[in-house]
Every structure is written in structure tokens, then in C-alpha cells.
Image (cartoon, one colour):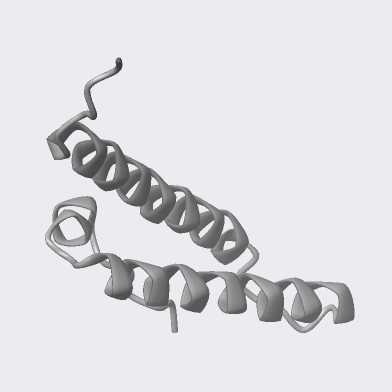
Length: 79
């Protein structure tokens, strides 16, 4: 059965630590699916594509949050 990944709106509400955990989980799933595909045991090959896209979604949200935090920090005055 296909794994249910969180939607982009749900990802945006997660804290950075949880996003990191989601990223790790998706990367491990991708690794396992690639091994199964090499052995010929992966029945649903479309799962590889879905997992890669989920990794990209999580990384996009993480980068957006990092940019937002950087903009909110006061900049030091240059002398």
C-alpha cells in the first residue's frame, strides 16, 4: 500500500525538527524502494517518483522557513 505523505499545507505548519524527520523518512523510503527496484521486487514503480517529489517539497518548505527566519533577524549595522 502506498504511504500517505503530508500535503504542502501540512508541511508548512511543522517545526524545523519535524521537517528534518520527514526528510530523513522520505530519503530512507527512497533508498529502500531503489533497492527493491534493482531486485525486481518493487511492484509500484511510481512510488519512486512520488517519494522524490516529497523530498523536494520538504526541502522547499525548509528553505522557505530558513529565508523567513533570516529576514526576521535584525541586521548588524556596518561601520
